[in-house]
Image (tube, rainbow, N blue to C red; front, top):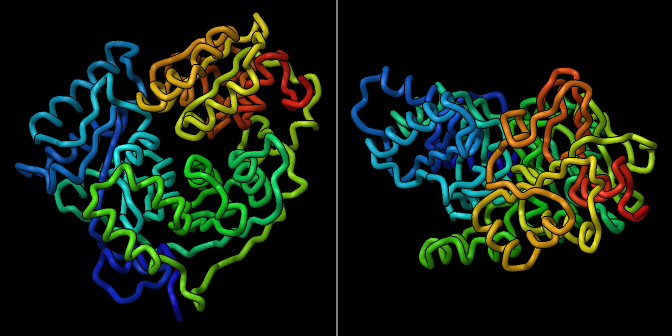
Length: 427
């Protein structure tokens, strides 16, 4: 009996020829990271261990991205703890204001993750990095602290569900629509503690930005992680991000990182996406999904375009395509969040930021900000937001009696102009 991609990665990291779903293993980690919310807890636990130094100053990353730029004294104190720990232990990959970005966009951009890596992060959307063919999963701060001491983590080997996508996508249909459509079909616990392996013609043609979006929301289906077989598109993305020696070795070995023909999957799902229209997830679950045409006269107060799900350059280009030459409804607060400084700079060079400003939107520094109801766009009672973020749970973006709808950037931008949720073609 063969192994899936995920099982091969886990076996290699515990020096086993084979692992079986349900087994507990102790595996070496290639990267362990945390942010300004989760790192202070990990630091506290690390210091309790009386360990004098971290297992590796190169395999830890600290990214203060949630409440930065600091919104209050408490968030400033959190970042101070992280900063001082980073300097004390000479953590190479500590990112300060001016270079920091949303962690799940920043780490791949910096070449810190590659195919076949085992990556853990103190953030549930660590699954994003499976788009590069890594096994990447979120963990609690105590587990992260353990990895900083030992360089290892324990994992219960998960089963793998395979998702095959085929068909020709309609205009305005994006990776965000595909993953929301999938979650709508299987539910928020449909892949509970399982690897969601995405495959098929649609995935093979998909850009890295789209693949990151797909894997990012595996956790919204309960998944342990999402993963995509690395290929030429993956290599092209990594070519300018890895040093030559590492890249050349990776290029030779990447062909082996595929599921065996006799690998066992807990389920195989197949979707023909030819008839799929852009979709929207209504409050208060990412699985509450319907086609955008089904939403009639849903007025919004705020539009958020960005986050670790849809704050990459392709997302900003799509939003700008809709907003160019148009004005957002003057009663709608429209907020744009480029996910990293490099993406911000690229958007500046391409004139996208000018499009946003002229349309009446406001542009934020890279931050998680409103996605978790932190700052830079918190909702008041009964207010409605359509966002390109990943969660619309009750109270997620502010007041417990506010409402969040999830969509792709084109639908969000069109809704900003209209003042209500609409299909971009309706403009």
